[in-house]
Amino acid sequence: MTLPLTIRPAVPADIPAIAHIYGDAVLNGTASWEIAPPDEAELLRRFEAVLAGGYPYLAAERDGLLLGYAYAGAYRPRPAYRATVENSIYIAPEAQGAGVGRALLAALIDDCTARGFRQMIAVIGDGNGASVGSRCLHERAGFRLIGIAEKVGFKHGRWLDQVLMQKELSEGDKVPPTP
Image (cartoon, rainbow, N blue to C red):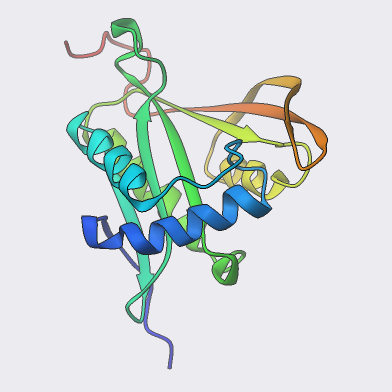
């Protein structure tokens, strides 16, 4: 019998599994446009920066195995963007297509809404190609297409498009954000 999927805050002890998942995405996919996977020390530094910024970093596990992770961070660094976050979701190859991404995205949306963020942006690498599944995942979660930057990245010997999708959170643009 398979245990249910658990979504929880990520902890520093998750970094080796996160490094493994992200490393595969960097080397074999187009969701990340990094060319070489960062080491565990760098991923720990990034993890700590996300948390220090007041953003969520979540892990999905089943049977004690980390199957994926998701986090939100600043969409852009300037203060006027303070109510807008960008999401990132990475799933272990063996768990793709099993609902892990859907569960992580739903939990991330809930967490960001509870923290008072108003807009969530998905920047999908190769959203018209290999990462089309990510585009569909976001569409099912209520994101809408807001733009496509064509052929702005080059990886795995080909030019990649970048798809931008957006979802309004909480009160959205109905009232000003909290300072």
